Length: 416
Image (tube, rainbow, N blue to C red; front, top):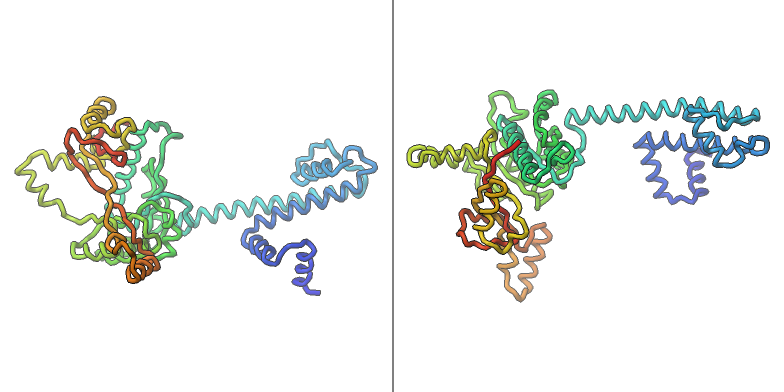
């Protein structure tokens, strides 16, 4: 009889379905630790049963299965307390086999676990390990400005911790950030240090590929930041917006609700990125003219922007939740409270604002044509309801009544 038929007959005797048996064999084949633990458990139960058969009548210290199991555990782990000792030749022979088998099996188990941990560490260092984070950020691409982005994120999380009163290493909240680029492991290793408020991970590869984004946990991410990517390019080669465009299409195709923010190189690609679904865009040199003119016409204003946006500045702009007791009260009340208690300067509010969707354009009676359009949009994965964007309310009237959806924008001083 072939081995396959014997195993199938054994499965039938155990009453296990073929599907479950298949899953178990696959699990054991993929995870040798499961096989080793199963072998140790099988050896323990079998040897304990044999010891009990030999010792039950002549040895009062091993007269039950529980005592035999205890003897088997302390013997297979080579602890050997000596409280239970076999007296018959058969029991001692089983004990000897159990000792030597325990040494071999536990050595194999320890070596397997160590090799798996080392292999995982190597894969992680090479950017090939699958990331298990949730609600994290994706930093797609790499250039000279990427460390500045990480520094700004680190500083922002530090400010959130200070404002929320989370002090101390145990209470401090950290933000998960996954770097996706083509840098060599040796080059990226030094970039993962110096950001105590960030939990940094590295995935090596082209972020326009779904397989790479899956390793980065894109479907569980909070948002993605796409920067002009110089990693993997030959020296002297300038990056382009093509990768950002493809990356936006891929990310939005995988997870339409994911927030995608893109740093553009050329204004000519602004419309293309918006059509691809980018939630917001950073356009180079957008404020250069205003800042230069401000140095002449409004001295101090450009310096104010530098102070608020510089990662090394003392003051910074941030949005904070509003205490519940101020909902329904006025802007003046909250401004006075923030300045008196936190030394924050309230400059305005931000809130989600409704944006008209397809459902508001279609007629209310839902004719056959309207239903067809609705169905086709849903089949394509496009929402027909009301989407939401952000609406700013800077420098509102002093008697502005605060709503429950408002979040405050403040200028705060960093305090270490």
